[in-house]
Each structure stands twice: as C-alpha cells, then as structure tokens.
Amino acid sequence: MLYYLFRYLEKFDIPGARMFEYISFRSAMAVIAALFISTIWGKRIIRMLQKQQIGEEIRDLGLEGQMQKKGTPTMGGIIILASILIPVLLFAQLDNVYIILMIISTIWLGVIGFIDDYIKVFLKDKQGLAGKFKIMGQVMLGLIVAGTLYFDDSVIVRDQVYLPNGRVKTESVINAVTGKKEYKQVTIDRKSTETTLPFIKDHQFDYKWLVGFTGKHADKVVWFLYALIIIFIITAVSNGANLTDGLDGLATGVSAISGTTLGVFAYLSGNFIYAGYLNIMYIPFTGELTVFISAFIGACIGFLWYNSYPAQVFMGDTGSLSLGGILAVFAIIIRKEILIPLLCGIFLIENISVMMQVGYFKYTKKKYGEGRRIFLMAPLHHHFQKKGFPEAKIVTRFWIVGIILSVLTIATLKIR
Image 1: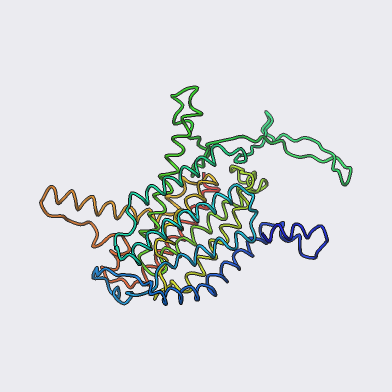
Image 2: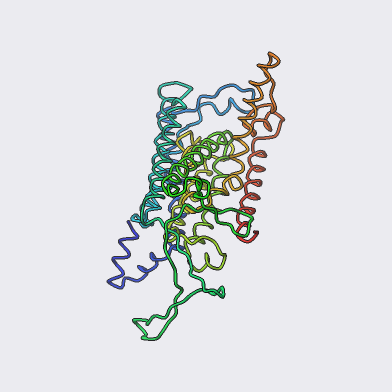
C-alpha cells in the first residue's frame, strides 16, 4: 500500500519518494517492520493468549524439563503470520502474481494450522484436526500453486538469444532522452516447466522430459505430473517443519536460515544482469519476492525473542505448517524445489527419522512379536534429548547444521 502511495507522490517530487522503487529499500523496510510487529505487538498477543488461558497441553514423554512447559501459551503462529503479512501489504507490489500466490499460501496454511490448534486447545481434543483434512488442505493449495504457475500468462522465463559464435545477440535502439544509439540484449519470453538441477553443468531440467513418451500430448500430461510434484513438496516440507517444532526456537531458527538463502536466490533470479552472469534461469518479476522473504526472516527472528529457550510462547501448528509451506511454495516459484532436500535438510531428516522409527517398529512387531526402535525417540531432536543433551545445545547445533546446508545450497550457483 505504501509502495503505491509513494509511487504516486513521485509525481509531486516529494523527497525520498523514489526510494520505494528499489527492492533493496523495501526489503529492508519489510525486515524492520516485521521485527517491530513480532517483538512489540508479539508481547501483547502473548498476554492476550495468557488471559484466554490458551496453554499447551504436554504429554509426559519422560523428557527433561518437559513438564515445566505446561501452560505455556500456544498458537503464537499468529504473531508470525501478522509479522509477515502486514509488511508485505505495506511494501510489496500487490499486483505481482508471485506476491499474491505467497499471500494466499501463507493465509491458507495458517488457517489449517489455526483450526488444528483450536481443536486441541478449546475443544480439548489432543488429536487436533484429522490428518486427512490437513492433507486435503495441502493438496488444494498445491493445485492452486501448480495451476497458477502453469496457466497464468505472466509466469514466464526470459532467455538470452545467442549467435552461432556463442555471443549474446544485441539490437540497436535510440535512447528517447539522449537521442544516442544504444545496444540491448535480445531476449525471448516463454512458458516453461523447467527447474534447476544442482551440481551439473547443464543445470536446467524440464519435467516435460518425463512424459515425453506421450508424444503430442506431453504439453497436457505434464500439468498432472507438475501438480503432483508440487503437492508432494508442499505436503512434505510443511509437515517436516511441523515435526521439527518440538524444541524452543528450533523450527523458527532453521526457517529463518533457509529463508535467507531463498531470498538470495530470488534476488539473483529476478535480476537480468546477475542471472546472466551466473548463468541461471532468469524469471521476470521474482525479484519482488525478496520483499516477502525479508518480512518472513524478520518475523522468524522477532518471534525468537519470545520463542528461544525457555520459550514464553509456542507457535503451534498455526506457525509451523505455515513456515514449511511458505518455504516450499517460495522454492517452487523460483524453480529451486530440487534444492529443498539440501536446503531444508533439517526438516527432511526429522521426517525420515519418524518414518524409519514407525516403519521399523511395525516391522519388528510383526516379525518378532515385539516392536523395536532405531532411535531412543523420534523425531530426531528427541533422540538427543533422551541421550542427555541440553535442549539449548541441541537447538544451537541444529542451527549450525542448517547454516552449513544453506552455504552448500548457495554454492550450487558456481559448483557445477
């Protein structure tokens, strides 16, 4: 909203109005606003949650310090959502298709998480929203994302045109202001289902190749494959973040680290010069997503003010489902979804640890009549708790691993 106001004020030569043209300035403002909302308003929201007696019900799992958390306010994800959405509405271009898609994804998953928390807290049903309804909601969001990215005409990639000698083709134009001849690169806009493959020279992969056997029907069939892949990614990452949210500050910190890396990719992918220099896919208008992810990072860091050990508030499913889903949709938009297993490796290993634990328990119970376990407890962070590691140390070490994974992800820009 402020973006459009100041763009209008440019006509009257208001000092500073042109600052809002720059993504870097608006991103900085989004971070500051998100930090302010999450820290200042966050305290008021926590008090409101305490007055409503919206406290966490703790199952006794025999973990050290676990029962001390009983009664800690939950549903704090409301703080994160407000801290993301308000700055985005203020500083982003709201007619940008990618910004619209991110706003829809944030609200959509926030509502699913809120319903789950409401059932647990107010209706006293520890199971919360039935898993099939959660999955149904994530599938519907996946269809919305896939449909928008596949059918919306404004979703394109822009390629440079090369001459036979390997040089970039240019054309001469007359500058309307100076009257001098200038040269600009010749480009071509096209629809694409391509994505980025890391660590290889020809790093673009088209999903259409997987359905090439359908011949002339490939353009239609690829939509179904594309939708299934997007649904799987959104479901896996959002549930992974949900599983990771078991220690104070763990999911929040890991999400902030991953979000920072995605912000770098969004800025580079949306800048024609940087994309050309790094030889990565140029996706017009995705640079605006830097404003969104800046608000996301600010919201996560601000929430850590109250969520770090010992936590004064828990995000609940309202926050955890949203954080994972936001990262998933964001990566899909900038064509970096194949990097998610590396970038969001913490979420992945938490997911895998649960699947391994459950699968092995069922297998041994069927075979030996007694269920056995691989880990002392799943998800993985609880395994380390059972081994006697202090909660704060586990969280810090997981953050360090997250930083290492983020650095490796950024390195894929040059390591091929």
